[in-house]
Amino acid sequence: MSQRVLTTESGAPVADNQNSASAGVGGPLLLQDQHLLEKLARFNRERIPERVVHARGSGAYGHFEVTDDVTGYTHAAFLGEIGKRTEVFLRFSTVADSLGGADAVRDPRGFAVKFYTEEGNYDLVGNNTPVFFIKDPIKFPDFIHSQKRDPFTGKQEPDNVWDFWAHSPEATHQITWLMGDRGIPASYRHMNGYGSHTYQWTNEQGEAFFVKYHFKTNQGVRCLSTEQAQELAGKDPNSHQTDLLQAIERGVHPSWTLYVQIMPAAEAAEYRFNPFDLTKVWPHRDYPLQRVGRLVLDRNPDNVFAEVEQAAFSPNNFVPGIGPSPDKMLQGRLFAYADAHRYRLGVNHTQLAVNAPKATTAQNYGRDGFMATNAQGRHAKNYEPNSYDGPVETGRPLSAPLAVNGHTGTHEAPLHTKDDDFFQAGELYRLMSEEEKSRLVANIAGGLSQVSRDDVIEKNLAHFHAADPGYGKRVEEAVRALRED
Ligand code: HEM
View 1 (spheres, helix red, strand yellow):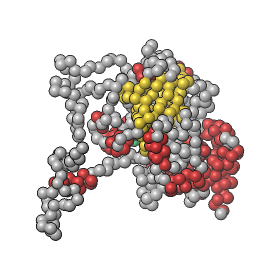
View 2: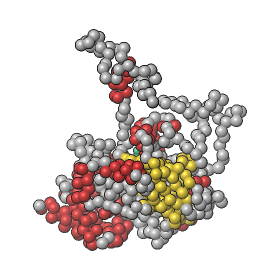
View 3: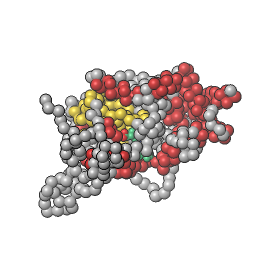
View 4: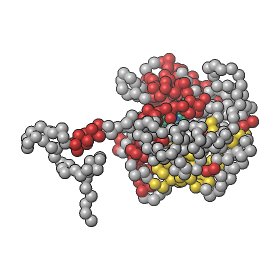
């Protein structure tokens, strides 16, 4: 077989890929060396901005198969029939580190699924934790600033991390989760995924339900201790990537079983917890898990940059039968992601192969902008309405309308009968075994004891005391012991 010829980007053959063209044997280089100029210029442009959060990640393709009938709750076509399969792409990630960080760290993990359905792409952009640190999106930039690098020292500062939490009692539940045994998954395969937010499903009859998604790993939950993680992060900073890539290449296909908790919309107002508060779970005895299907990952991307770095998930990519709830965090996210993609990837990021619909096509009147590739044909008009048989609206909302009341203003989230910032954190603590409690306390104390200001430490201790007096007492003693060392 004759060897293929190396070409420039415009396809012309390259004569020499080892020596630049020069004026004479020892002379300066020539501006006419197109191949050299193109190589150097392209190289300068190989990086795009990393994601402002969730910068480190790994992705894989697979499918979702419906195993149970949920048509009484949603008319989403991809969930419409037992046995139905839909292609998916899933990107896992850590949150706080930049691209150059390590995988085996104490941090939530992203669990972002793109379902390529026949009614358009449905993005479920979740985490491996059922709750989150805050409940209003207006706090998100401050929260992330406090967890990432300090603008002066250029590194993560325990002072900032804990100062933010001192002012955010609603974070106590998620902190208890993160500092506990599940805070460092052994790999992306060995952790659950959660939609975390409450979403809305609408059935054929127009009835609305609020749902929470739970992807349970079929590999079993496996976690690392702080010490194991520190060792692994040093040995193989890409440990999660290595694990996922190699498992799939070996034909060991990871899978998750999807369950949902379903609340009839009429029950939301009277539920003892605000069902739209992202710092709260719905106990399973209130709303049991109902199985929906199975997600399997069986194919690695061919190119990490094209398919993982350029993957764009947006919580506002819904399909008919699924929509948002009034969860304020979710509402903020409905804006944030597509805006981030337009900055990071450009206005036509939806035309990239990993982001474009696969089981249907985008048909609309948007055309132009940087890197436009989907011109939609010679006769397609770029305005609507038109007399040329262009695509038209359905007149059918994707999901049922949400009830609203009251006045506009900057309101705190409404409190339901059992709502406070600490009850569920205390419940989680009380569920733990004695050994788990000890590890949790040691992890919290390890971070909190590094804080320089006593008032910040005191405020945080007050949160653990409020969650459970025993919890507060043990953290306080452990912090004191470490500070006296
Ligand atoms: C108001 C709160 C939040 C805001 C403003 C926000 C914003 C962002 C932004 C700007 C990105 C980067 C997107 C990109 O450049 O591609 C991102 C990534 C991500 N966020 Fe959030 N986020 C919020 C809360 C959450 C929550 C609560 C979850 C999980 C339940 C979550 C899960 C993720 C995931 C998984 C990614 C990575 C997606 C990927 O793999 O490409 N975020 N977030």
